[in-house]
Length: 242
Image (tube, rainbow, N blue to C red; front, side, top):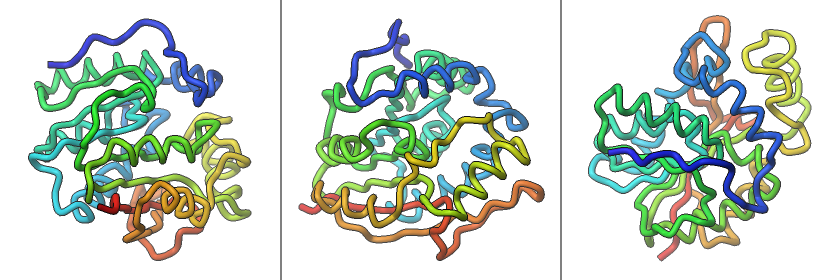
């Protein structure tokens, strides 16, 4: 069974209220494959397959999805047999996620509106945090909190956007202003994260890097594939050192 959503925004220093409000305004479109989250719908199978491959399968495992939004990835992992908890700071997105899971008859996924630092549960075998780190004031603190909730040897899968001229041209100018694939203002260039920065934060948290791959996405053909280039969107796989 899913939890009832909390009311109001939880207190957390590591939250950008403007970011939450922005996602609240479009939360009703989470499950519209032609709407504001169309790119996420297109790449979600690729992301789920990457997690499945890197972790050796999520079936039967306790999975935490940090920044779950409307539940696209959380549901994909639940369908694959995982016991999933999704958390997000947007009450509207949590309501959307819970409603969709109920309609789908999924009782292996539950959702809560709270920041990861307030989550008392730990010993997760897999933690995912995709397309979220670039939307918080202190992404390194999120990494530390995730590491504290992993069991030894557990897997952490992260994804975000690189910070360089190509990513600015592609992910911001192209996606937001030219092609209008996502709402304008979704990404702040200054908050984008270089792979070297992300790897350094994870190393400090006791996490070992095992893989990094880029995501090549063609919005016109709606095709996607993994690539060795991490110049724009990229995924990283870490494990917590025992």
